[in-house]
Image (tube, rainbow, N blue to C red; front, side, top):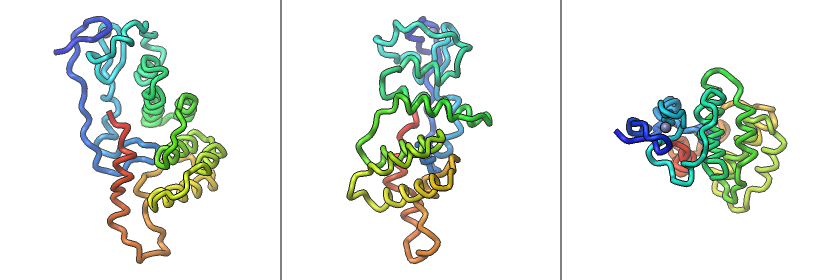
Length: 212
Ligand SMILES: [Zn+2]
């Protein structure tokens, strides 16, 4: 038994999500079996209501933050407040969107909140992920603009995923898509080797990085 760093209430050890085996979504949500454990990624302190992946490991600098009203927002939004200003904030807000979507709701508003604090990446994989989050938030023009800033010389996987994203944007599609779908070779080029591309490989590892 460890203790909540805010209030000292005993809490169980943090949840350790299983490693993903299935394809991630293009917005970085890990595949199964990780995907469906989303609700267990945060611990909620029974004493003070603070939410964190590991209540016992909150940095000292975060301990003075007054926990916000526990009923006012989802656990991921409360965690986002604690990590405000850090690279974890947009990830927490994106995870809050996933939770809403799992319950059949519309996560676009939370995705836009995540984008408002998103740090613009310089690398191809980061830019493509950003474009997907923008597309899923309904910001199709912004998503296309992000793809237009991809650096020259990107690899075949990035080219294929970017083309997939552009096609979705042109169709006005704001739905969920798997990385494996984007990497699948077009039907007109059956000579292209399927196996290697469909596993995702390099790209799966990059895009699986948002799991706890
Ligand atoms: Zn506590």
